[in-house]
Image (cartoon, rainbow, N blue to C red; front, top):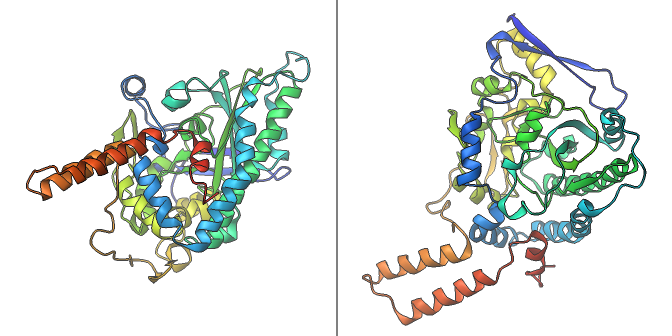
Length: 424
C-alpha cells in the first residue's frame, strides 16, 4: 500500500450523488494544476499568439474532410451535425450583446450557477479568471467579461468504448449539440440573475479551453492531450461562458495526473499513429506531453475520427477514484495490459490487442500543411525542383488558381460550412 500524500474531495458525478474522495499517493504529487512558467506563457502569447488550426492548417483541414467524406456514413454524420449545430453556434455568437433580464442583488451567485449547471446535466463546473492569453488571435475582438464558467458534459459511456467507430462518432457529435444547447440555457439563467453572459460554443472555440479548466480545478492535462476530469476522464466535451457576475474563483488541484500519466503511458503505447510523446517537454511555458499533429490527423481522417487515446485511458473507463485507489493499493495501473482497456478495432485493418499496432503504407502520413496559399507555394517549389528548377507556365497557372482560392476562403467556422454548398 502506497503512502497517501493528500486526498481530493469532489461533488458526486451527478446532481444528488454523494461526494467522492480521490486518494493521491505521495509519489504522484507534483503541483496543483500544471507546472508553468508564467513569464514564458506571457511572452509566447505576445510574440506567437495562438490561432485556430482551421486557419493555420486550413490545407490539411480541407484534405482531411475530403478523406472523411469518402466514407458515406461519416459524410452523413458530419453533414447532419453541421446542419443541426449551425443555429446553436449562431445563437452563442449573439450572447455577448444580450442584456441581463433582471436586476442583480449583488450577492455572490457562484453556488446558484453551479447548481443550475448540474441540473442542466453538466458533469463538471468550475469558475476562474478568463485568461486572454488563450484566445485565438481571430477571436480577440469578440470575447468579453472577466470571469469564466468552465463546463464539461459527459459523452455516453458505451459508444465511447467502441472507438474508433460510427457509433462513437455519432455520440461525439450529439454530445456537442446537447452541451451547446445546455450552455445557452445556462447563459439565460446567468442573465436572469442580473448579469451578462457570453456563451463560447464548443463548436466555435475562442481558444484552447483546457488551461482555464485546469485553473478552475476541474482536472489536469493528460499525456493524451485531453483534460482528465475526476469522474469521466477525457470522456467529456467542454465549453465556457464568460460573465461579469459576482462569483468566487475555484483553485487548481493536484489530482496526481501529471505524474500518473508518466507511469501509465497506455495512450502513448496504444496510439495507432505513434503521435503521443513519451517524455514531457516545456512548450509555450508549460510542461506537457506534446502531441505530434502530423501523425495524428492522417489517422483521424482515414479511420472514423480515431480517438483511441480517449478509449484506452483508465481514467476515462474506470474513473479517477477507482484508478487512484487501485494504484495506491497495488502500485499498478488499473486495466493496463488487458484487452478490456487496450483493445480496439480499426475498420479495414482488424483488431489490435495489447502490444499490437497497425502498420501503414509508405506515404500514409504525407499531408498538406499551412493554409491554402502556403501549401500552394510549397507545391510550386516541389514541382519546380522536379523539373530541374524550371518553373513552367502551367505551374504558375496552378499556383495562381490555388492562391486565389486560398485568399477567397473564409476564416469563419460557419462560413466554412457554407463554402461547401453541395455538402450542406
